[in-house]
View 1 (tube, rainbow, N blue to C red):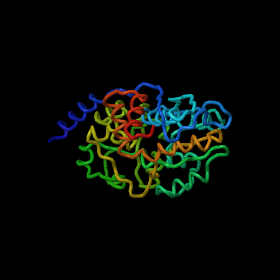
View 2 (view 1 turned 30 degrees about the vertical axis):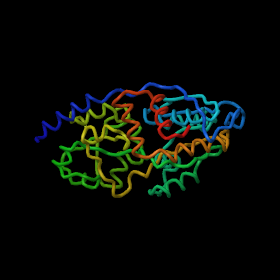
View 3 (view 1 turned 45 degrees about the horizontal axis):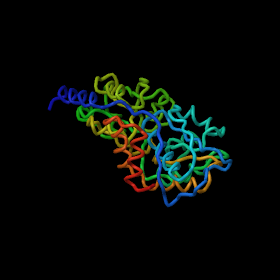
Length: 309
């Protein structure tokens, strides 16, 4: 198959990708964790749950919310807040009590000198640098981390399967991703310092969505930052480049919570985390992206399937 045909198929695949899902909803039911009359917060008020402005993160937050509600714990949803630079000050101020995060990226945000790369080391390091009044609960088996991806045609034409291979590419390389990628430790400066690779950067503000994919397929950029649990990677036959030097830290889904979250509520959330696998998260994301199901419905069906409430 020639490059033009592959690009055309990629473009067709992109057109089949649906828009991201709508918000909100709640669940009902019983659970072994039920404590009638409990509010789940130390002050007796509803627990405020936030999420990033990213459909996958919203799904996880909705799962937390429905699981807590199923156990008689009141919640207040504050979803689609934005990037880490926007929501972390809100969390640290006490305005948000529960937030689904990612271990590696959060560690780098809190400590840009962190050297841990493995799953357990990153989690331990993250626990040690959490701001006062905040703690991390158990990390989930599910991962969703930044990854650099190229088209199959670019990979084969340049012999590129890892970030280290980029140093041998003689044509200019431009990365596409959200604007904050420009200053992330794993952004252009990180590629230069770790792999000796000089790249350009084009901001594309859709979290690795259809605009990012179109820019890649159309050749406007040669490499894009897409979260590893995004079903678009497989749907568009992209090649995720290996990272032998650990530019990207291991990044598992992990809830961060305030002191207002009681042990009972924490147990509910930890039960959810223990059940959430990497395969589950990709499948849940596909329901949002490809079938345009709402976060509410996706969360409700997954919790029922897992028999968690």
